[in-house]
Amino acid sequence: MLTALVIIFVLAYASIALEHPLKVNKSASALIGAGLLWTIYALFGGDPHLVSKNLEESVAATAQIVFFLMGAMTIVEVVDAHNGFRVITSRIKTTKLTSLLWLVG
Image 1 (cartoon, helix red, strand yellow):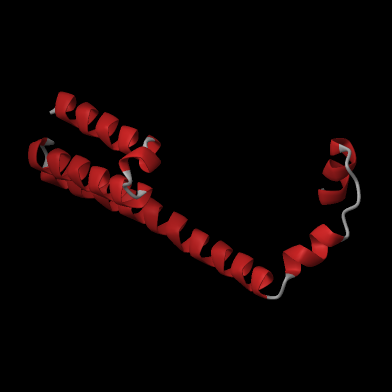
Image 2: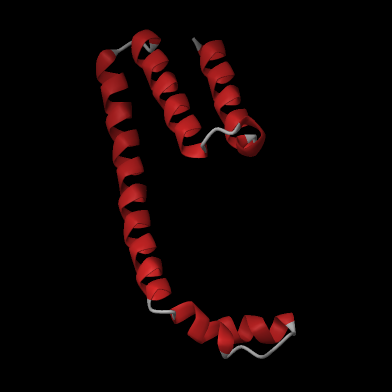
């Protein structure tokens, strides 16, 4: 089981890293890889209660990240729709990195 999990992980990771040459979406590769990993773990992982608990924790953590990203992306899209980034970048006149760091900070 462990060998199969490692092989699937490496293949999924490679397909994510080689997204452009393979012409495969990163999200699709990650979701298919995760689905295969969880399926193999659920079928051959042993105690069903332990598998269920681990899957529940993983789904909960993933859901938290997704909900946070949805909120963050919404804020970015609203700012972009109202040209907020253009307003900010048009006022930056410095070409020195240290000054830019202090300005952005």
